[in-house]
Length: 231
Image 1 (cartoon, rainbow, N blue to C red):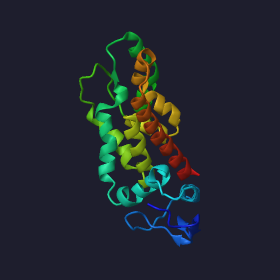
Image 2 (cartoon, rainbow, N blue to C red):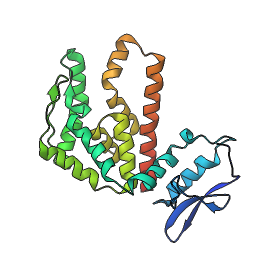
Image 3 (cartoon, helix red, strand yellow):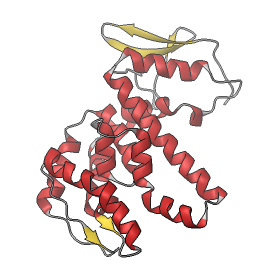
């Protein structure tokens, strides 16, 4: 899409914030009022629009994409997003340890187990850790506790959590980012612990590097989005 505006700026009125393109209030892709929770988020999204070139590239506007998802999809019907996020708890990455080599198991135990323990205390979610790749049912009370923590979130934070959880492959890592327990970089490192272990031995191919870079950018965007919601 060619750029169709000259200026982009944040706007605020009566405690509501948005973005104006050429002084015209912007609407969401679905045509809904584009209203944001904080001035900081509005300013950051306006900056994304401002820095576009002659061609508009949505991929270069991750904050805009997250906000649009929150407004057009999650706010309207949060249940599918809640179920998708909470569903990760049934087979969460951090609950499955390698049978071998021993050095990988020990690394997983040292770096992942503190997050499993944290979830038990933070959410009263006693998730079971297993060795091997065969799924094992998690305690129903643990799954209910994770879902209760997720369903309590308002649409914008819920959207950020969904993005981080999907990119990391773990609701525990997503929640740790949401709560500020881990940074985006730490979430990324922990989510790719197994793959990093293999890369140390066999190297990294270009396709895998591109995939990892894309997922890292998604986690970083979720972190920034959450920070702007709290600003």
